[in-house]
Image 1: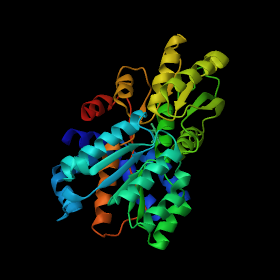
Image 2: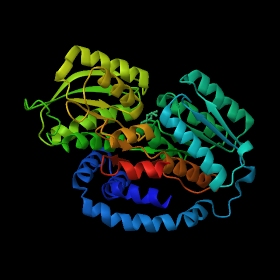
Image 3: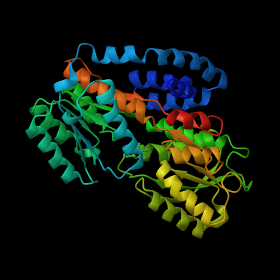
Length: 381
Ligand code: GAL
């Protein structure tokens, strides 16, 4: 755990600025801060924050005590619904959430029910109705469709059950409503603008800034997650924005939805490479699962990452980080499921203790390149 914190310090220098801006500012300010913060990260800053992060590692036990206080979790029931179990990243998140609730906060395993939404909002809404009927004490929900939040929030609120939404962010009007109406609902996630910016920077940091064929522009394909999801929208927009903000000309050859799925990532990349061949210089994937699929298609087409094509993802799945280390992916971005799980669980406890909770709670991303990939890998094990 100590090493883990140390590695993550690489991202802290930039992301602390982002968090501060995110707390106080509107979305434009946050956007500007994300970009500025990402631009101003230096190795020296990263080193400085390493020390602070090490110290933070020492206080983990205290932090847990602070989060739980005298709270007795042993009889508290928790309903959790994940948008679908068949999602690499959300599986890591789900396992960590359960582990943290039981091992660190003292919840009883039998009091935690975790349901699979199977990518079907109607099915998930039924599960939530059943949780309400059973009278669970708190809900942690990863919605299939974030647009269902108003309706679901109202039901939970009427039943007096606090809700912690995770991973798929409801829209800002809904979040504001929780605050203005004093509804016990909140969101825990990451600001996906930051992960997109980091992806773009990883391309800018290559020897030719992404312009492999030297024609003065970066020609890319974009493999998107589920476009209803704000993570997919922001990563798509901000990865490219990092290039254009740096004065790089870009050309979008292809953009398709791959729904976070490896097989779809492979198929779409194969299609794009067939259609555009060597013109494709950069493959942006909104997540690592799709990047793993893209890599299969890249290799099958006889192309070589970091030589004649660049490839970036988001999440830092172990396999993807290993690929970064082996030079088979240009980079990825750590979507910190450990900090998000901790924050979601701690905030659930805050609700149960009757404390005030902010409507939005953001966790930072960390860039993963060949320089820190080994350390990230060791920390994730
Ligand atoms: C994203 C993550 C994806 C997928 C998605 C589900 O944050 O990067 O891999 O898990 O959430 O909503």
